[in-house]
Length: 293
Image (cartoon, rainbow, N blue to C red):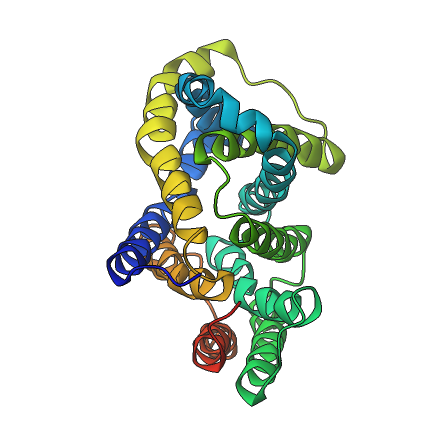
């Protein structure tokens, strides 16, 4: 169903702004990790406060949420897994690599559109797939001394889960955002703890460290993370997953620029910058190649 032009424009603006905010997600994670709150726990505490804000909204729309409960929790699990994988990836690889690997999302959205939704392929779409995969190969060039690592694998997996969730959201434009958001904010911390536990012994942070950081973490959760996720879900119901993935590349720009400024050790080789450019180019090709994804 075609959206009104003004709604489509608002969805585009919402996606760009929300993604820009999301591009700063690494800042509180790295900051509180340095303050003694392990990065994985910082991510958990960035999600949990939003749950308490969403509960009254879910209750108010309880009849609609009951109708879509199973679908909401399925999609919430997919998106939650994607964001959990991305968050944990920041602990094991550089911000730049994690971000650029996440932005293979438009490539996976294209493949899923061709396979799951039985959409037609064309030169631009196949070019986007080739371009994105070549970019992945160049980005993971090990001449910078950083070989393929578990953080890269987690970031790559996060892009696949996000694409799956985006496809699912687009197929159910009437699902209540309150229940969908709650499911995501509940599932993400569970996945974070589970993934982190598989990788290393996960110790509880000291109460002193948590107490000192909790107020700022809660504020970041309610004022930054929750609005960004809510806006992205709202836009994903109105725009194609491939287009959302492309527009979300404003996150990559914010993340890469801020990481380059505040984390000077996170540099890329010329070859890797070429790979990053190809990944972004794959998104541009996808946008030009079809609007139905």
